[in-house]
Image (cartoon, rainbow, N blue to C red; front, side, top):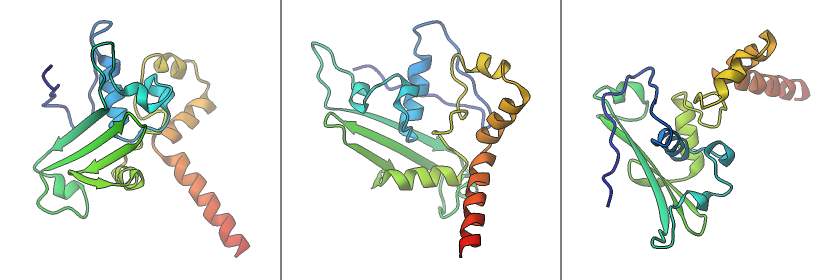
Length: 175
C-alpha cells in the first residue's frame, strides 16, 4: 500500500502547487475540492462521483475517501463554537453506490452542515474563483474591466451578498 500523502508547514495565507506534468498537481487539488464539498464535477474531471473511486482490472475499491486535517494551536480563536481546539478534520467518503458521507472531526454530518460551516469561515469551494486552476489565469488576463470586477466580486463573496441583499429588499417590499 502506498504511503498517505502528508503536507506540512503550509503558509496560512497563500500556497502554490508546482511540479512536472503527471506529478499529481491536479489530483491534489481535486482531492481538496472533493473533501470540501465541490458539487460541480466537471471542475475535477469526473462525470459522476463513482469516477473518483480507483479501479482497474486487479483492484476494485468500494469507496474513495479524502480527509484534510487542519492543525493550529489558535484554531479555537478562529472557529466559533469550538473550545480547546487544535485540530479540525473534514472527511468525505464516496461509496461505489454513489452515496456520499461527510464527517467533521469524525462525526457523520449532513453535506449542508459541512458547507455552512465552511461558508462561515469564508471557504466556498463552489465559487469558481476559489482555486486558480490551469488555464484560468489566461482567461482572467483577457477580461475587460467589467468582467474583471464581476470576477473579483464573485471571488470575494461580494456578489453572493449582493444577491442576498436584493432578495431581502424585494421580500421587504412585498411584506
